Amino acid sequence: MLTFAAEGNGQGKLEINGHSQPVTYELVVAREEDDSRQVRIRLNAPRDWLLKQGFDGEAVLVRNNGSRIAVRREGGLDVDDAISVTLEGCDDSRIGADDLADAYPELKH
Image 1 (cartoon, rainbow, N blue to C red):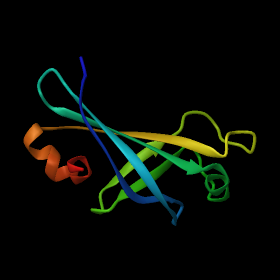
Image 2: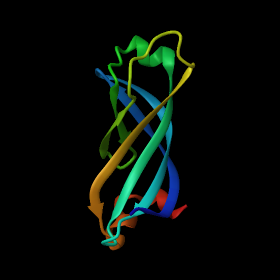
Image 3: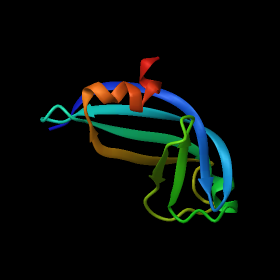
Image 4: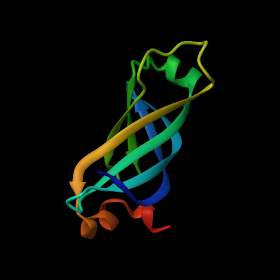
């Protein structure tokens, strides 16, 4: 069972097919029963920019430290969708509590 452990936010860029767009993102950390951590990432991106870049349901968030995390949206995307589209990703590498602050300095704020 997951329990809430921490949250934070940061700025990075969203990449699709060699093009990038500045974005802000939110992080939510959940603690596993074995005391490891799972980090969930959520961001909003402009629908029209996503469509122009050929968005096919997945993009890459590049954080300020250079790490890359896949973010996705289930289902298709077209001009009838909201102008701001939510994309989500998850770092399920099961980071230990001691390594969490180093891997995600955004959580220190």
